[in-house]
Image (cartoon, rainbow, N blue to C red; front, side, top):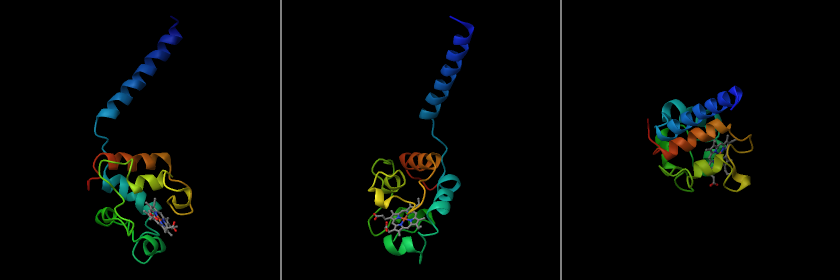
Length: 127
Ligand code: HEC
């Protein structure tokens, strides 16, 4: 085995170990520090009382309580289940393409989509 190969496989192993650890440990995603800033930046200019998204859907994304209440189409977040939560389906583009959110804009960065997913899967806590 060449020295180079050993070095490569060792760093690959280190990367795998890091992945394994992050997959098991709680992620540390926080509603207040991570999730609300994403919503404020990407959703709240339309989804706040009186704004077009709120008028159309009833969704107010400016606070935890309002977000968890959902809109006139029902709850947006099912704690523990990002797969069927409308919030995740919309930002991931898994709902119909015409209603991907943010409305008429670029998709969110993968990092933000992942943060929302982890937060919902960890119970959508107000933390
Ligand atoms: C530029 C304004 C705008 C932005 C930004 C925006 N929305 Fe919307 N949203 C709308 C409008 C308008 C509707 C009404 C439905 C439609 O016309 O697609 C809507 C509808 C919705 C609905 C109801 C969908 C349905 O029909 O079931 C949800 C949920 C929603 N938005 C979530 C979000 C989230 C989450 C974000 C941020 C990632 C976001 N929106 C960003 C304007 C916006």
